Length: 385
View 1: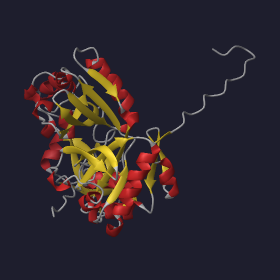
View 2: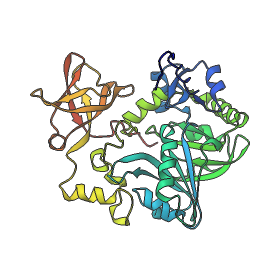
View 3: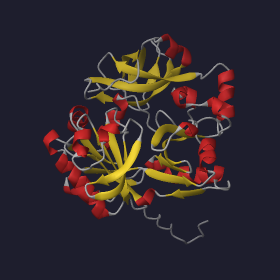
View 4: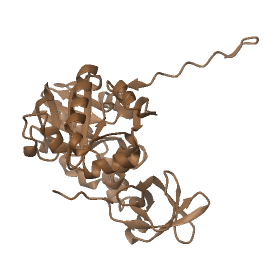
C-alpha cells in the first residue's frame, strides 16, 4: 500500500535475456536478434526464405542451445518417466529416442518432449526452452519424491546444434569417424565431433528434413569450435546459419506442432491429433483418466486441421475461422507463407464435424474473408534420397 506523500516506487528492471554460448558468434554474423521466451536468439541472418530453402535443398545450421535437458537416473527412472509421459518409454532400447509429452491431469499439454534412453536406468528428456523451468517444477512435483531416482536439470550444461537438410550427413561426416549412415531416425550414439569427445549425436530434428542434433559441453570455446567447424565443412554445400524464423516455417511445412500454438495446457491430446504417440494401454500415467473419459464421450469436440489458402491472403496466428455462411467456428493456431511450396498455409482448430467433412472454410484476414481448403498434413514430405 502506498502511504500519503510517498512517490510511486520505480518498477523493477526487466530480467536480462539469457544468452547461448554462441551469442557472440551470431552477432559476428550480423544476425537479427530477438527475445524468444526470455532468450536472446537469432531470428534470421541473410533472410528467412534463403535459410528455409537452404535446409530444404542443401544444409542449414541452427543453434538450439536454449532447449532444456532434464535427466532421470536410477533404478526408478523408467517408472517415473512412464508415469509423467504419454508415450511408452518402456519400448525404447539403449540409444533410441521417442517423441512424447508431459500431460496435465486433464489430458492437456504441459509440454511436448523427446525422451532418450541412455541406459536402462538413465533417461534424458529434452524440453522446450520457454517451458524448462515450469517443466522441471512440474516433474519434481509429480515424481520428485519417488524412490530410486535422481532428477536433475542439466540445461545449463549442454550446447545443442542442429544440422539439417539433405546434405547434413555429408557435412557432419567430415568431422567425425562415427558412421552416421548407420544411425537410424530417432536413434543416437556418442562420438568425437570436430575434436570434441563424447558428443551425443542424434538423428532427429524439427524441420521435416534428415539431420542430426549434437549435444556437447556448453562452454563458449567448445561451442564456437563445433559451430565454426560445421560452417566450414558445409561450405561446399552452401550451408547457411539459420534462425528461428526459418525454424518456424520449416516445422509448419512439415506439419510439426509448436507449444503455445497447436499444443498447450488448454488443448488435449485428441484435439491436437496426437493419438499416434498416446499409449493408453500402457498403464496409469498423468492425464490418462481424463483422456479415457474424452474417448468414452465420443471424442474431441474440436480438431486441428491443415489449411491451404485458395484465395489471396495469409492466415496469421489467432485469425478467426468461419464457415462458408460466415459463422465463426474456430481460430488459426499458426500460419505463414510456405517458401518451398509457394503457397500460404495454416493450422486451425475447427469443430470436429467440420474437420470430418473436409469442407472449405473462410479465414478473417483483416477486413477480408479469404477462402481456404482443408488438406492433409504434413504439407511437405521430404524425398528420401
